[in-house]
Amino acid sequence: MEVPGDIDAVLKRILNTARPAVKGDRSVLASEDEAYLASLVDAVRTGRRAVLIVEDADERLRYMFSNASPAEAVAMLGKVTEATGRRIAESDI
Image (cartoon, rainbow, N blue to C red; front, side):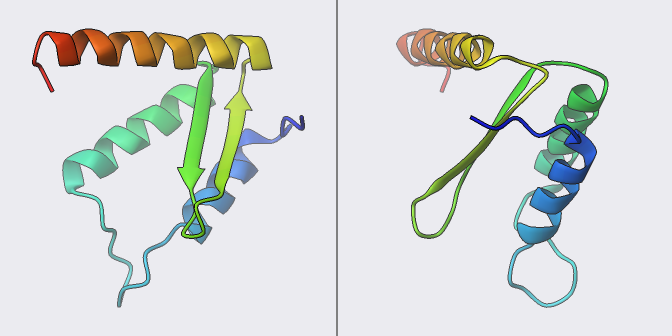
């Protein structure tokens, strides 16, 4: 598995290629979601561990681990699954 060395270049490429096909430079994300995404990118840039997963139109997954080993990334995904399960059980979602 390849782990990119230059996270800024990877994030810029993802953000530039993920632009929606609409007139102008508008995003399909709500402004709150744009702000949240920007805060996540800032956290990655400051050294926080991250797993980024994007599903392309052809259902292929693109992903990267940042500041984390593959084992740490899998552990993080497990935490997300566990937290989501608890929220569903508590009807918070």
